Amino acid sequence: MPSYNFAAGPATLPQPVLEQVQAELLDYHGTGLSILEISHRSAAFEAIYQSASQRLLRLLKLSAADYTPLFLQGGATLQFTMVPLNLATTHHRVAYADTGHWSQRAIEEARRLPGLTVDVVTTAAPDYTTIPPVPALATDYDYLHITTNNTIMGTAYQQLPKATVPLVGDLSSNFLGQEYDFAAFDLLYAGAQKNLAPAGLTIVVVKTKYLREATDLPSMLNYPALAKKESALNTPPVFQIYVADLVLKWLEEQGGVAALDAENRRKSALIYDFLDQSRLFSSRVAPAARSLTNIPFTTGAPARDAAFIKEAAAAGLLNLKGHRLVGGMRASLYNAMPYAGALALRDFMHQFEHAH
Ligand SMILES: *Cc1c(COP(=O)(O)O)cnc(C)c1O
Image (cartoon, rainbow, N blue to C red; front, side):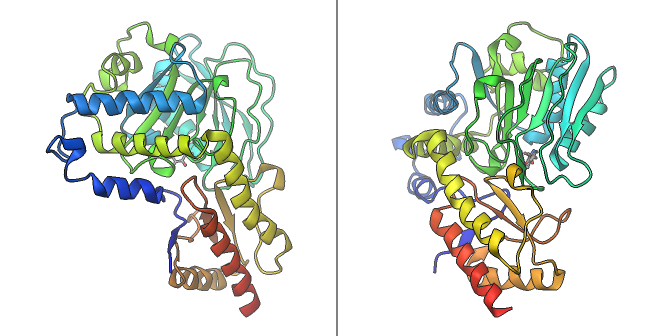
């Protein structure tokens, strides 16, 4: 019986990628070295870095003249600090949309910086089951920050807000799995462990115009300094970047973001259609705001939820426990979750409903 990993992150990776990693782990392309041992200054790693950068821009349909990808550490969480440090340099005033836990974490971290005004311009409080519109903004904001997909609440932007100031996005949990006009962003970032690679890598894609002028920020927090050294100001996470390149190749082979978006809609519709007619399971999220990648749901009774999670795990459907902030269950259906996995979950829910 196959098992499926519904964890929100670190999350499932494509099976063919894991097999390739295993096959070439002991000797990377005839170098006589494992990828775990090779130097970040080697020609082999340089080729991986260039390949991953190019694939990333191709998948996002962004031009290499206008955008620069960075492969960093510190998680999406460090970007909560690096983004305002690097981008809030003209007006020292920034706008945030509060759509869930990770938006709030981004707001909290921005508020720790002295001399910065952080305005929450829209909020999904108190329920966080919708995506509220962004009002017209004053022009003296350095940027508007949004979280495209709310991993814990299970909501997502279906369309990007029309921003009259530079747009910054935390795309961690629907990165390359949902189609957006990526050129609408001045900067986007994503922790890799949701959709792209093992934990320890953060993707930042930033308009090259922000990299032209040197700043006096500490080097490791400084996009221009990091870009100048192709993300290797210190030893970069070689293995994670290697896996990311293989996953990016796999994503291109699947047909790119548009194809993955369509497939993720097909997978998530299996679960949403079931929830909509179920007499046992339900979702609190407003249909217009439903995430393609993270689906929280519940039976309404904590003991029954616990029984479901336990029985599902015994049937090979792993990591369905919901986030502690919302309880219940959560199914994460990232790019690497096969349709068969979503189908197996739907069938198991059906069976559980009949038994209870
Ligand atoms: C998981 C997650 C984060 C935190 O990512 P780290 O890489 O662990 O710092 C931030 N934002 C969103 C939307 C997430 O899903």
